[in-house]
Image (cartoon, rainbow over the protein chains, first blue to last red):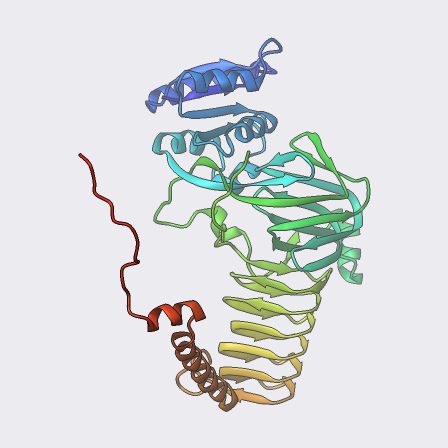
Length: 261
Length: 173
C-alpha cells in the first residue's frame, strides 16, 4: 500500500488528471491513501503522518517542487520514494527513466527500486532532479569540475542531481547561402553544440548572479559549489525491458553538433 | 542526514567536450570521452577516447581504444587499438597494441607496439630489475624482523623458566 501526497489542483484540468490517475492506480491494484497538501498542513507534516502510519513507500503527485520536497525528506532514510509528476517529465526521466504518467503508474506497480544520488549545494540546499537555466543569448560560463576547469559560451545549462552537467549552445547558422535561404523562406536554421560532463563535485563561477531554476521557481544563484552524495535516496524506477528505451539511445553519443529547424 | 555508502560509478553515456568548450586540467571518465573542443591537460578513459576533427588536445591521452582525427600534442596510449584518421595530427609518442594510420594523417614521435601479451602485463627491463630488488629487500626485512627481538625478551628467553620463590598459600574452602 502506498501513501500518496498530492499538490492541491490548480485547475479543473489538473483535477480531472488527478481523478483519472486515481482510477488508473486503483485498476493497477496499487491504490492507497491519498492526502492533499494544504496551507494548514505542510508537506513535511503530511509525510511524517504517513511514516507514523507505517507506510514504507511515499509517492508524490504534482509539481517538481512537491516531488523534490518529499524526495529530500526521505533521502538518507530506509523509506522508498515514488513520483508521478504532472509537469516536466524530463527531470524525472533522468533518475527513473520514466517519460509519461502511464509509465510512472506502471513503474509503481512493478516496483523496481534503485538508489539515486542527491546533490548538496552549499551550504544547505539539496536536489535530486534537475536545475537549469535558458539564457536569451550566449553567456560565458566558468565551471570547475573535479580536476578540470571548463570555459564555454552557452545558451543553456542543465545540472542533474546525479552530477550530470549539460552545456548547450544554440546559434543560427550564419553561412552565406543558408542565411540567404532562411531569409527567403522565413525558416531559421539553428545549430546546437552540446557538452556533457559527469562530476562528483563542481563549482559554477560565472556568470555571476545568474539564477538556476527548478521547475518554475528559482533554486540557487551563481556562484555556488555542489557535491554529489551517492546512493542517498531509494526510488521506484521504470523496469528494464528487452529492447533499449528511446531515452537510452538518444543520450550521449559522438555527434555533439545537431541540426534543428 | 545523508549517509552515502560506496562510490556510485554510473555507467552512462560518457563525457562530451563540445566545440565551443575550452577545458584546462584532467578529464577522466569510466565511459567514453569525445572531444570536439580544446583541452589542455590529460584525457583518460577506461573505454574509448575520440578526438574529433575540430579538437585540439595538449596533453597525454589514454584509453583502451583511441580514435583521432584532430590535433594532439602529447603522448597517446591505447591499450587495445589506436586509429589515426586522415585529418589527424600528432606530435608525441604513441603506445598501442594495434595501430591504424589512414592516408593523410600526420605523426611525429616514437611508436611503441606492445608484445602479444598486451600492454598490461609487459614490463620494461628497468621495471623487472626494480621488482627483483624489491623482492630481495622484502625478504631480508622479514628475516631481520625474526632475528631482532626486544632485549628483555632475549634475556627471558635465554633463562630457563622457574617458579618464583616465595611464600606458599593454601586455599581455604
